[in-house]
Figure 1 (cartoon, rainbow, N blue to C red):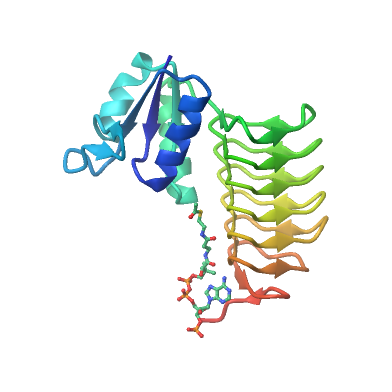
Figure 2 (spheres, rainbow, N blue to C red):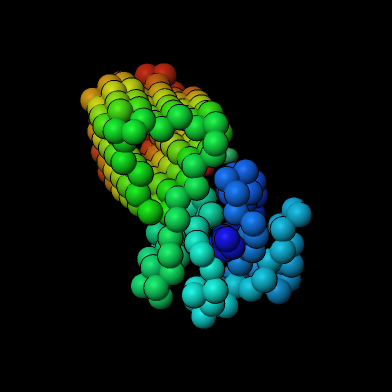
Length: 206
Ligand SMILES: CC(=O)SCCNC(=O)CCNC(=O)[C@H](O)C(C)(C)COP(=O)(O)OP(=O)(O)OC[C@H]1O[C@@H](n2cnc3c(N)ncnc32)[C@H](O)[C@@H]1OP(=O)(O)O
């Protein structure tokens, strides 16, 4: 079983590490910095996005490991349109309720928890130690960073990003493309596209 990972940076290393623990025999990276970039830690970088688009049939699974939510969405959609088989990578120590739903291309890292009736949209990231409580919806290509917590029934919009160690009160909505800064405590809905920080979280004024 061979896996192609698009995006040869730190996030990709964690994806590759989890994939090997899950039993993938071979993990090959692709990155637009190739051919300058030839390795990613112990793994080989074997081409760029165009190379991979021409070779999707060579792989049993593909995953995009790019932290930027918008770029990840664009790359994943291109691979899918080219007929690539997107897979999910769920670290063996993650706890996923059998009543949760996990979309294509999702990665869930070590010690994360996804509880009953949560829905994780295609291409989303549930990072190390993050908690997605019961009945949450994590939008497509959203990112819940390390140790962040979404309380029950939170609705995280498409391409939204919840920073490390942030927490979101139950039943709130974080709009599409919104950013919750690391450590923030979100006590009200966050409108689409807005960045909030602090406790209680307020709009970041620049
Ligand atoms: C495995 C991984 O690494 S996954 C990735 C995990 N990474 C994260 O969670 C990071 C999330 N990102 C953040 O929290 C960022 O700081 C953001 C998005 C909130 C803001 O980033 P930028 O727009 O670049 O803002 P910038 O860094 O210029 O900061 C603007 C101001 O807000 C302050 N600020 C930035 N982030 C925060 C925060 N999380 N909490 C409180 N204050 C903050 C800064 O100190 C600065 O204050 P000043 O104007 O008084 O100097």
